[in-house]
Image (tube, rainbow, N blue to C red; front, side):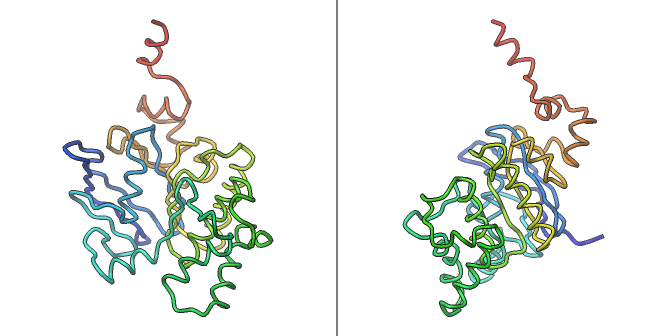
Length: 256
């Protein structure tokens, strides 16, 4: 069996005295589109933020391509972070920079390549996401969906083996969201990139996910193929989530 490219072991996260994530364990295989889902406040984004090294857990391991980012320091930690790419929910593009300038930022900051090479690589990344003709546009001059594509291009600037996407479809209309799903599928297939995606958008989950974990109250309550979970799970909360059905408590509150 192929060695996992991501391993999360016994992860425990707290804010002040409150446990947010408890005993989180899962693996991700190379080239997999792996989705972290759950309701609002379930800990999805908290998990992502710890996996990309923004915060340290109180316990556990996060092994990315064989190296534990929790224990890594100095140059070793920098190397781990260079091997991953991140697209935040807002896209986080710099409004005063063109798309080309946004995408080339990681290359300028983390490599010694000459400007001509940096521009060529950045333009190629924009072409990969269908934005080659928009390289000199400002973020405000393009649509929200195109901004998400540009953010993915920037996340790919250093050729990472793992791409983390936080709510990529948030705020997009159904057609734009579906187009973004197709882009993710194409990049995963053509480049062999491993995607770890945080989302609660059911159409996207069913369209792109090879495997999912579902968080609820800080724990993993389901793991597997999303269609199988939707149709065969014994967990009532999982059934409610996949079938967009209100829980008994919500239905009682509506009735009163």
